[in-house]
Image (tube, rainbow, N blue to C red):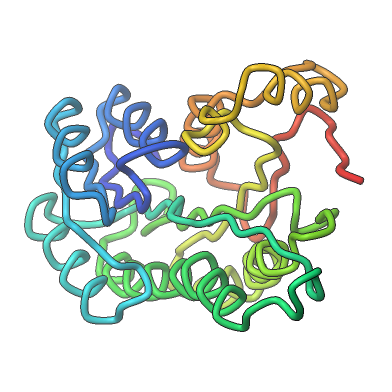
Length: 251
């Protein structure tokens, strides 16, 4: 599948990894619809790249269904879905103030894991309607995991669990959708220079970068976007998780 022929929905598209992916896809000729809760920022980015925007709550069946319908109306089809919407939470299972609030665990899993599945299932239903392209493909779904799925640190139980779920559903979802010629992949980023990290003091950013073996720096969101674009175009990639982390192994 060529990016120039792609019609993509990208969650979390108003900032960070999602915005970088949207900008890269659009630069390669793809049609792009951004799904995000931040309407002001989402509309701005969509206008800058010549795409579309729908304010969306990925945890809501109704909200995502409306967003997918809007994307199909504007683009004519959906051939790619990239799930970048997510939240990060920190808190030990048992801390100084007692057990971690259950609500913290639930909201993290709801947004990061349930939200990704929600978008994937509804996007897949539209992809299945597509006529196969020259390579026999109808679509590709890319979910965002994290290196925390494999070596999460203390205080990361909710986040690691949600991202571990992304890893765990990659292969079975690829098998589920094989008959519809829809591929499923996941990307597991290391420490990337997203808006959350950009708010840290420079010394803190430098310390995080020093933990990365090579290159000793934070990941750039556009690198994630380029990898997502490569996955779209590399039709034999399916059912796998790709780490992009500079050989980082957290401890």
